[in-house]
Amino acid sequence: MKERRPKVVIVGAGFGGLFAAKALAGTPADVVLIDQHNYHLFQPLLYQVATAGLAPSDVAWPIRSIVTRHRNISVVLGDVDGLDQKHRRVLLRDQQIDFDYLVLATGARDGYFGHEEWRRWAPGLKSVNDATALRRRLLLAFERAEVCRDANERERLLQFVIVGAGPTGVELAGAIAELAHHTLAKDFRRIDPRSAKVILVEAGPRVLPTFGEKMSRYAERSLQRLHVDVRLNSPVIGCDADGVTIGQNGVESKLPAATILWAAGVAASPVARWLDVGTDRLGRVKVGPDLSIAGNSDVFVIGDAARVIDANGVEVPGIAPAAKQQGRYVARVIDARVRHRPDSRPFRYRHAGNLATIGRRSAVVELGRLRLKGRLAWWLWGIAHIYFLIGLPSPLIVSFRWLWEYVTYGRGARLITGNVRSELPERLC
Image 1 (cartoon, helix red, strand yellow):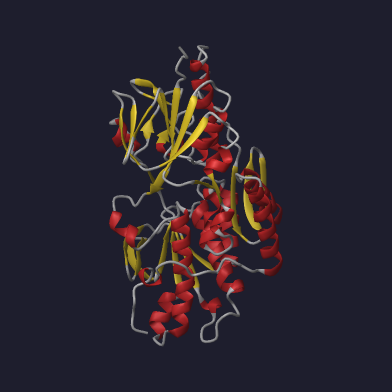
Image 2 (cartoon, one colour; image 1 turned 135 degrees about the vertical axis):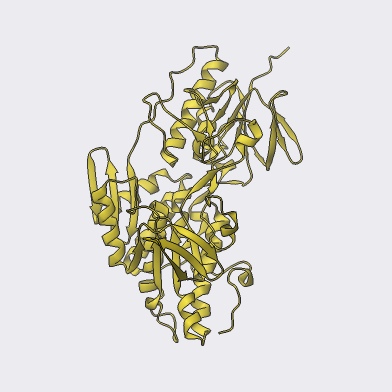
């Protein structure tokens, strides 16, 4: 009688889940990769989709095509509703999947600091749908301003507020400013897109707080050169259809805006509820040195859903390189157990560095002791992102589009698709 092979179930095909699956390709086990989408998404470039720089297909790649060569990996498209740890089953809406080892790599969602009602007015940027919806909002704002007769409403339509000055917020602010001042500058007749105002709101004392102070100051100056209004020490205390209310030096002020973009915080996905375990304040599951959960060494949580303290006592950041390292590490642990070998050493994170782009030809890079800013950093940032793209044709396509955009200031993905009426409140103009 043929011995049953162990089954490894991985929930989530982001960087952590996908790289765990690929690392298990040579393991004598059956791997099932579950995701609610049929594609792997390169999330760091979503802001380029949102600002019409790239098409969605440039930053996403079909999961099945990525793992097609690995015969022990199968893909299931579906939504996970919960887990049955006692019987070792993953519960989907229409089926149950048994597991011997389980890897939960479900990522994170936008966090609104207890104000979920703000989500309606200030969408985040975590999915392709988010990016195309934001693109629709941005382009519609200019279109509606073009036909608006009321000066105050036209000003509100052309005011864009980004909440949060981390890498996503800074990249969005720079890209929107360039969209208004260069790409769209000559496209309209009644309005001047260059009159659009981009406001970047940050509760803390500087932009890019995970970078060094010199790099943060350079990024702030670069944003100001792009005509971005940077508001520091300005926590958001209100958000509605009319705009954002901030508190600055004890004084409340209203920033009228038809388009508000959220880049201020994240909250973990519902993994903790499925597992019925404790979390940190961000909802992340606390895992052990081998990234397994307390009380069940065969269940692992990685990526943004986990709070990981590595062997050096360092809290691991929620970034793509960290998720990839965790995915590969968990694969090694599972492979060792399947082959009845000693487990690997505790997870140790190797920080590759910080990168953020501020706009055309401007970026900041921290790689070990190396500190770069300006045009050289921008090219290094671009090369690094292209290198990490999944799928063979995708880096070539993205490289060509970026080169064309660099030369022409063009943004070829300026398409308004989907439900146009639902994106901006109708107002009398």
